[in-house]
Length: 603
Image (cartoon, rainbow, N blue to C red; front, top):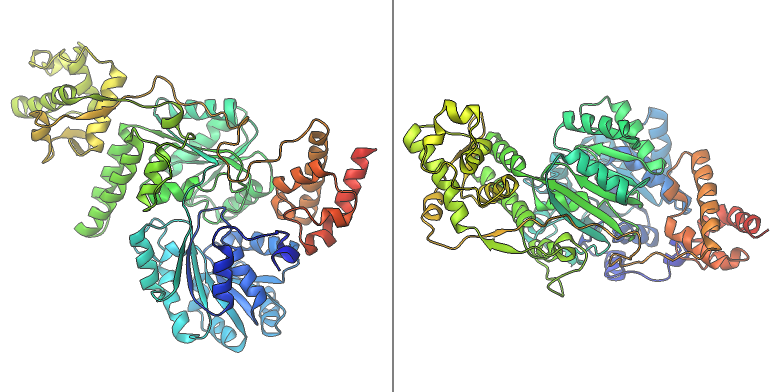
């Protein structure tokens, strides 16, 4: 079935064991990184078992593309959601009851509708697949209240196997998923969270939009990518900035008209080389395989969110970049959001712990991949991965005990001697001995700490301050984001412990992903001089076919499949059918067209 329908010769990792578990009627909880092949884990059992596989997914806007991709394989798939008119829904319901579907996609809120439950009870269900299962975790980064209803599936259909799948979950979140979905007795399959083809890079903020533009122009010209911003205003301003600089960019956030969001998302999925600038409202379930970069212009709230978002790059296994610009204002902003958030003290403490883990990843001198995997309870087999910024441009640390004392003494004296609180800029000006108007108005040039910090530059002091706030040795609060002491400040000011700080590299690591595999688990086929123009002809044919059918290009064939076709130049449909990713459905539908393109290229 794997070969015939999907065109693959063998399963990867735990896929076969998961499939066999569910086919035999067992429940499974699956953690597998984005691009690791989660969908096959329920699609194959749905085809192998009697009845229809019911897939619960929060991704209404993407259901059409998911169904189109399955239909291109020859799989009978449909969906029920609020975007359909009554006639469309009625047709799908009739197909379900007649056993004319292999897979049916539902949004979780459909299960609150009595008519939907009644429909399912009248049909034969092969399995329930709960996609994006982390949405059930109440304090997770993508919590969806409707997911709490899914625990009732087991009570109503006790004989139907269930498979819950997610790309992101710590051990605690995994336990919460199992408990809330009544899957505590299910077999758990935890694949490696490592995405070796992704190069992780975190840089100090310094005009981040210009830094982003430099990244796009020097490393990713013409590539598809996603840029995440924290606010809607920043999304729109960044999209306008990139567009003005000649980069094809579109905005996406919850404040846009639904039709505009849908249109922009459809363009991103269907067109090559577009950049989507978005809030985190965009991205879950995006199956576009050739996203070459994910950039963050603001600090993510948690490592889980960061991992989930960066995982949208390089789903095809090809070299890709995860780039984040990070600075002191990010820390200030996130701390303030936690303080202002709804929820009790325990909830705020959890948010604080999430942020602390994210800050630790930003400030580490270790390999970022090692630290990222450690967060998810996994151990990288080496001390360095060779494909992150701290490996490509090793970061040293320095004894910042005295520097920290100078900063803390300044904050302390402002409060004790003047009953004043100021932000980072004024504290740095005092340390550097700058005689600004603000310094002279407040007589800060008379403080004993005035000018004691000329041994460091302004950027270096900003790095020190950022790291002190990140470690909780200073707090930021009030309407003007002023610096304040914490419980740990006095001990640090006394210099009772050596404080090692991160040294910012002189320059950020520059990706060489265009000429190397980047540690990819599936290195791309290198194209010969003769095969390269054939590949481009195949891409042109694919683009035209996708436009005609109104589907994303990757629904027809992935780039990796086209590369293999161009390199091997199969002479007939028989040879074409041996290429990875070409099952019977696609061979029957596209085989003659592909062979025709190859023959034209050879003539």
